[in-house]
Length: 268
Image 1 (tube, rainbow, N blue to C red):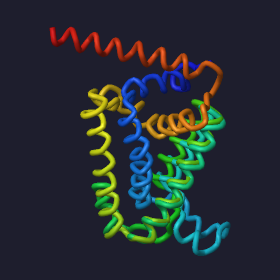
Image 2 (image 1 turned 90 degrees about the horizontal axis):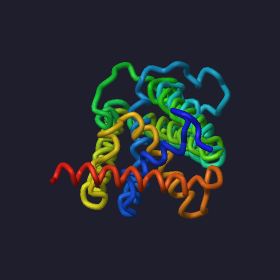
Image 3 (image 1 turned 120 degrees about the vertical axis):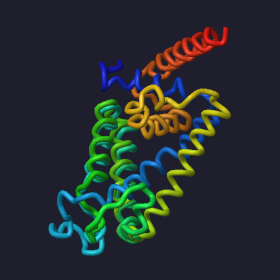
């Protein structure tokens, strides 16, 4: 059964699904949501570090150089855990993706350097750390999102949390590798491409404004998990619990009908 409030996966999924019922629009979001999360972690790589993993000696020197605990890693971890709580199976996959994104983004950011990467995130920070994995806004965001998904559904949430962590790690290494002067350009192009594609999907195919215009926080938090569940349901017929899809579809149809009725009243 669904959970109350913030942990109610059924209501979260129904809310997001009401804005993404067109197959083409769903495909567009499936392709672009996670890249947005990944490139955001490249940006977060250049935030102040909570702890420098190079001082721990846990990982080989090459890995330590890229991974730092910062807001990006924290957010990846949170998001991954949150997805796991929402659904264990799908949440675990999402958590793995979060982890992969964090690692990849860290290496890219470390490679590009701050002078290039900041352009990807529309802001500038000084005194950038030389090590890819740091605890900053990027890590914090990844941790938050991961935990949020885990709370929603333990199985699917765990997968989503792992994806968040993966995105944070990947983004950290990429950012550290590219350096800021190059990384920000890559992030900027990626963000513009992904966001433009999604808005076109809503305008051309869905013919409805994006969900973020009605509930920004809920839309941004649930987007990565939503597309993951869509893939799991489409390919494997996965459900967090028996009857989930039937209940969600009923809520989606009711919400769409309500929106259409309101739209018709405005026209008349």
